[in-house]
Length: 380
Image 1 (cartoon, rainbow, N blue to C red):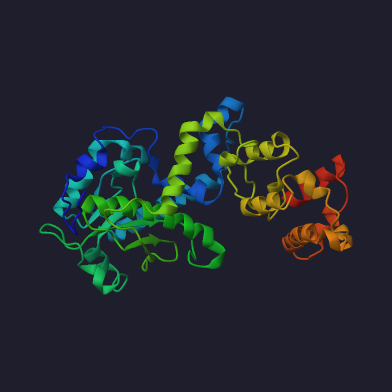
Image 2: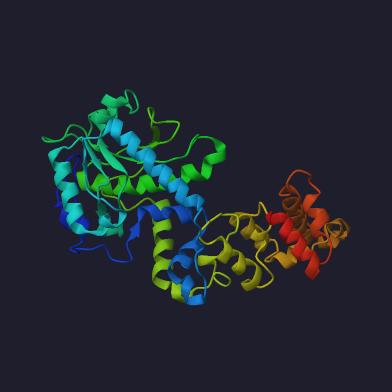
């Protein structure tokens, strides 16, 4: 498929829709990047298959997630009132993005050169992805409203007879300080999501954006720019394709997986999830043989994999560790000593505050009551 710069050499609707009227169940919504970037595949499994195993989502009249969601919508509405109050909206609800007729409406508005399109429907059948960013806006509109937000070379790039510049995806987030180290995971999530939107947008308009923007609570007048690397006439970026493939594996094969047995849907208590936290704790403590190590505060999924490699696949194996014994291994066992030394360094390094924190609690054999007390201490 030959793809030009600014004008696709193919019918965008035909290729993007793949001939279907409604998004198939195995197409990934870009918004679902969140769970997999946070290393929480178990949450997706619980969404789709949890009820088959007796798990139910937590319900609360005082849900923090619902509160944050409402505040996010309020921020979006306030921002659009200032910058895009008279612009057109395609999808009234998130589910509307699944309808091909809304993809068609989006393309018609793009062809007409609408400066801003709120909640457009974006599809790309060849990669089985779809979604609805908060808005897309012309690069020239962004330059007019936020001078110097874009590199000069990007402002007028991708223009056609009806379109001044090219469309760029923007999302509104309630977060603050999105570019600081403490919010690294949040930036990874929004980058993945906007990158997927932009990949679809680039193929729909025949020009691949090199930028996307996130509008935050402390950046309402200076959107944070995210540099993109996707290319036209190329497959989805490998990092995004890996997320998409993982998502589809769980969606299509999740009925054959169990979080306490299969890594593809493994539990990770270090990734908070208000909806499923109680179910994940049951899986980690009661379902997983020996107990899942992410019950220990500060042990993430990455740490869990490292510990498994070092010979500590469960919480029981951690609680049975005798760290001083590592120092008395004979020279003829040097290879094994090196491996155990690495694990000792890991365990002491991950202790909060005092380096001996984990050692003092994990160097004695596991007993039922002490284990419960330790787990309770770590989780609180």
